[in-house]
Image 1 (cartoon, rainbow, N blue to C red):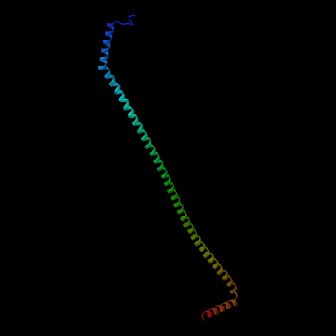
Image 2: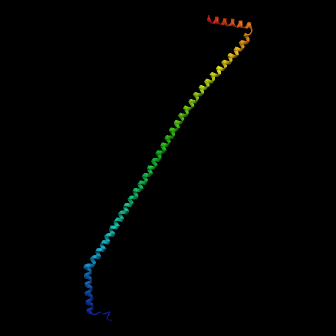
Image 3: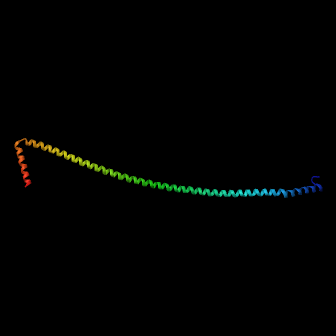
Length: 166
């Protein structure tokens, strides 16, 4: 039963050693422990603040990234619209130039055809004239081979010359 009811001397030394331990701990141990707890608390607070700032910056970067993407899309649409307009202008210009060139070629071909047609008509007329002269020559030779006919023709021609001169 000695364990349940300690002696007064033992109690004195126990309280004295407990008091010394409490005094030593309160002077040297607790301030260091409290200082460590405070530094740990301030480190955690700073880490939370840095994490909050990083989260805010990440949100800002995300918003800026989205704005950059939206601007790029708008620019892409503008560039595509401009390219389409330029393409349409180029196509229309090419069509206009092709039409003008085609008209020039057609007009040139018409002129060439007209020139060749006129040349062909002149050539045919010349051939008709030459053939007519040859036929007339042959007919005259045939008719002139007879003596009486030559004299009649000469007299008729002289008569016509005299009428036209008067």
